Length: 369
Image (cartoon, rainbow, N blue to C red; front, side):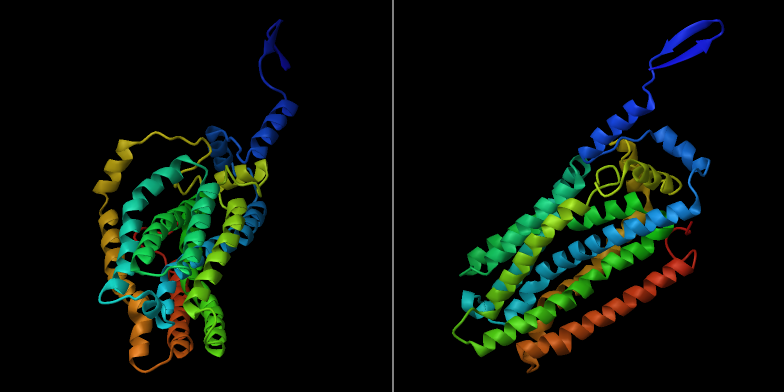
């Protein structure tokens, strides 16, 4: 307690001293969260309380811890989702007795369940701790991918692919929340490009390993089928990575790898971006924000942009490998002569576009700040 004088009389002011504040903060951080005073954060930002060098060091720490985890999570989700295309060239259709349009349905059912589940998943992400939510989802879909190795027929594959779509739908919304929570608007483009490039980057890494699995299966025809080995590998990898995600993912208020002062600095950095903060996490639904989103033409522009992009993308990722095989390439040749070069080109374009949007102002929907 502190004692202050007002005129000639002494007043006892019920203000906790520094030790009490530190103790409360430490307890809060021990629970994985730190409460921040929004007014204090805004005032600190306006007064430039921290130097550019301090903020630069903080940004470097966030980048080296968070970005690799985001890259791996995004890439693993993509690799698991499209692995069925590679598995199809290694005998999945024949071993499970798929006929007619049944293989096509394995792709369709994934996206149907993904679409239906994404709304509820976003609701959950807004109300529960982000790191554990994504980690649990990742663990579940890792188990599902692993179980695909033991599937024997179309029905079993359909059920597993449906559940996989449900579990994977939390990843991309979580990455967007993390990007908005830790980075300023000017930093969004390049950071999004970095973790977005993981779709191709991680696919190259897993494709090389799948190539090795395929070669080993060819040397031992009576052993484990290559497509089953691919599921065992990808499922096990995803389960291991889910534990890393658990400890790294989270909003600035939730993560354990930032101390209380660093969490405050992160909040101060993004004040000017006006992208929101979880300094005082609220769960109420704000209809005025819904109305703003509905009236914003960018909402519809982005919707149709993603739609137009996804139509050809879905076809090439699901049936591209089968097209190569129809031209006479082997399953192994399809990986090294078709899939990997395609993904390398994708990474190059990602980097070029990201650099262009960062260096050239007024090339996005809104002026860079």
